[in-house]
Amino acid sequence: MTPSTATASSGAVTLLIGTRKGAFILKSDRTRRTWKVSAPLFLGHIIHHVVCDPRDRRTMLMAASTGHLGPTIFRSTDAGKTWKESPAPPAFPKLPESEKGRAVNHTFWLTPCHPNEPTAWYAGTSPQGLFRSDDGGVTWKPFSYINDDPQYREWMGTVQDGTPDGPKLHSIIVDPRDPQHLYFGMSGGGVHESVDGGKTFQTLLQGMDVVEGFDRTTPTFHDPHCIRLCPNNPDRLYQQNHCGIYRIDRPSDTWVRIGKNMPKKVGDIGFPMVVHPHNADCAWVFPMDGTTVWPRVSPEGKPAAYVTRNAGKTWTRQDKGFPRANAWWTVKRQAMSNDAHETTGLYVGTTQGEIWASRNEGATWTCIARHLPEIYSVEAATLGR
Amino acid sequence: MHIPTALRSYTAQQGEVQVEGTTLADALAALDRRFPGIRFRIITEQEIIRPHIRIFVNDVQAPHLAAPLQREDHIYIVCALSGG
Figure 1: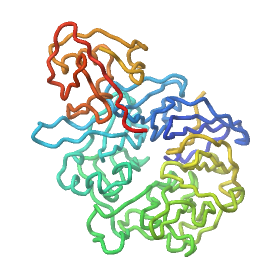
Figure 2: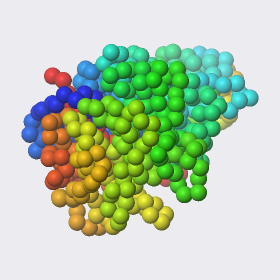
Figure 3: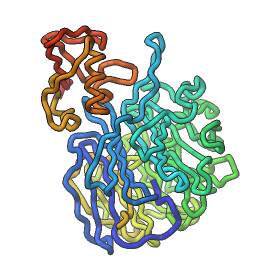
């Protein structure tokens, strides 16, 4: 999640880290030079996403499951000091035994709603479902019609059509100008938009490529990895897709593949997408190797972010501080984020359990934590006092 | 009812609790009334015991929630050894 407002913050930053084996909280000093990592929270739980509510800067939700137990949502109202489990986490409706009902395996994505709806949250799950809470994340209900709509169910596909650990509904975006205006992505299943608070959704696929040989008019074959809306220009969105990097400027309904301007030997495949909180021409990606059998690691074992400062016309490599070679990382779609400082700080979590930070918009990088479990998500927050 | 360590955050770390019911479904409903949320970690929204959970009544594995219960039965919720 990118910072939800275009207002610059300063001072200490808190990173909320979800990993395959628990959650961690990293806190910086006011200069963002030194960091302190917490003891593990819910050690052994699979934590897909931890998000601080920017509306009160104290409430946190954590999407969790374990190898044995069903999924749950942990909730804190004191900035992570204490946590309680949701008595009613996201769950699909019970269907008659004659029908094959779905069961949520894990909640994958959490999005705080609009400031005008201060206790509302959205959640995306695997198998793919869209859910909403209106009580600050305590209880959850299916949202909109899409979970049960035959057309959407076809587009969502089955477990065989999704990522290795299940198809995911993600990148739930609320227009900061209008809580009725929503976007979400499905891997696979494409990008979808509602302008009436979820009563209806339309596909937003035009311009997006699919794997060669598949039909680009079929949403099932589209795989957006991560979609971000620019806080200071909500008509502009960027997307890292299975098949390239894109930008769209609404009201246009056509994505432009700005990844074509990336260096050919690096390509434009990756998982995360990050946008500048105060400059809609500026965005970052973290490319991975999408050739042959898709190793999904840094190309040639040389990790680097790439930044555009002109809305995708050109890209600049940012690797100062990263290992020069033999670093076979993957950075997952929720594991790169930024803070709301005027000079935004960037944060990358790796599958090898390292957190890398840049205080200068990617010009230089420093490892601020290592030896954590495999990192699934990194969110930057400014906590309230 | 014997509670595995993975679920004792719900039961204030109690490893054994007493519940009433004539079926396993009744007993789990009673358990959830007392410890809200615990049932969903064990049973899916489609009323199926989760893949890596096993429930035994005395020493017999319960295949589904309709399993009948007798007074004084011992119910064991077990996190299955799922390999590794």
